[in-house]
Length: 224
Image (cartoon, rainbow, N blue to C red):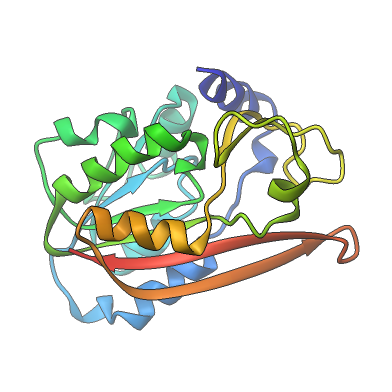
């Protein structure tokens, strides 16, 4: 898989490209839902990367499982959090989460499943529905089709996925492999298809190149 090769190389040669702090929208989600008052929350993070979101999950005393398809990511996470209890990391393909034995109160996808094309993402969503407990929550932070990168790139694999960035103005120019975007109506339909009810839906807009380039994310919180 091209994405996997790209990330293995990136994490070995350019670790500074990774976030050092938790995603802001994830922090807001956790605070908004009063997780500080909840006990024994089991959480699965899809594509945990180098573990930038793990500290905030530990702050809320959650029981954490982080999975990633990158061996380098898992090695970094295990070393970084080796002294922490209630956290484990697995080299695992998110497309196979339906094979996992446990179920979770919370499944998190922070800018991770964009590496999947449209049909692969549909497989993942079915797995998420299966692995969520009753009243469990799926949180996702994912690229929107309102982004300039989606509108101006023409090397597309399917109706939602580009194969590569050709425009140097794009903030993600240089990424290798699939990069999937979605519209708000599309994600609402997909949540409905897997019987998850959206509780919270917002957009986050970032600009680059002195405001000339827009990159938008959709933030969804959906309950089983």
